[in-house]
Length: 249
Ligand code: ADP
Ligand code: MG
Ligand code: MG
Image (tube, rainbow, N blue to C red; front, side, top):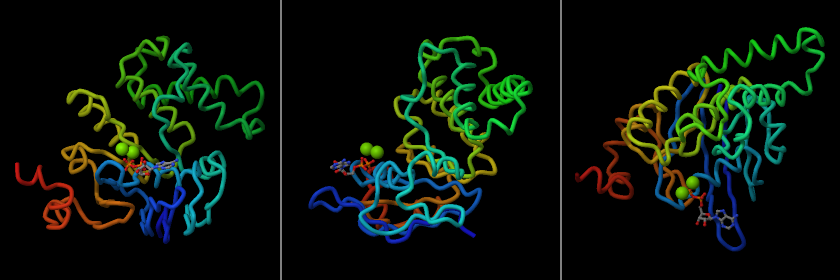
């Protein structure tokens, strides 16, 4: 009944083991935050799940299938999407064109799904639906590269939704944002991930506590605690190891 299971995942770079036996279960529709100090291995763990890196040992199960070692595109088609830190956006294309391209990429293997004549109309409608979801209708014809950072993040979210994923991985989506932009993006993430599982790495603890159903704490490649925001807030070891300064403040 988990949508995503990590079982005994390990990853070494040379002689250094960065991910040291991680088990994690994500239920369908669950919002999980992954927190931990810099260098804990959070991004590496995402790479192992999305297929960008192969684990040294252990298994990744998604939607009932053992996806360990699969190529990223194949994992994406199964319904696991990952944000690409804006690098996936084409700055010289409009917002509309970027979203349409993401939809075309996802449907490229399903051309017969839409009859040739219906395809363009279908694409336009699907693009407009996504524009509306991330509230970028007014910027449809704006060049992506000319938008603000947080607007580019919204566009990136729309492109992530193009594959209608069952689960989404977001790695520090609010990095570099003002507190106003952070709040806006947090609400948008809450809206667009409704009904989907979410695994999010985020350093802003206000965002983490507001957004997550459950939190896992990764320290030096090991999950040292998992619980509700309330349990994590009151977890003595976590307060000392990671939240220490904030808990004392
Ligand atoms: P986090 O996202 O939690 O800040 P990372 O997963 O980015 O942590 O990095 C965890 C550790 O793994 C760091 O010490 C980093 O230097 C190391 N690391 C990450 N990628 C590589 C790599 N390709 N080769 C060697 N070391 C790496
Ligand atoms: Mg980091
Ligand atoms: Mg990271």
